[in-house]
Image 1 (tube, rainbow, N blue to C red):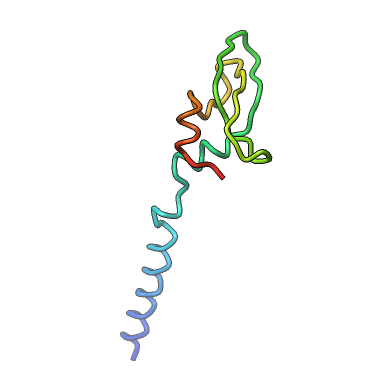
Image 2 (image 1 turned 135 degrees about the vertical axis):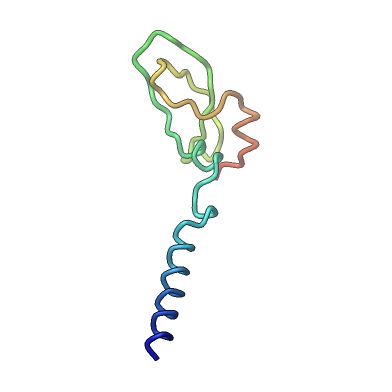
Length: 85
């Protein structure tokens, strides 16, 4: 009886830890890029890039300034191909 309890406990622990580390639970690259909000940096670098606007549900052009900003998409096509929602 004691051995069955230990085996059951091991099985439950294994299922718990294997499900919490499931790779499908991690966001995809597109999901991460789609969630990056438009922001302004603090540098003189000025580049045209794209981000997904969740309010308008579309990819939009933005002027990203500074090397400390996260730039989600380099082109409109790259943004649209991610299928942001």
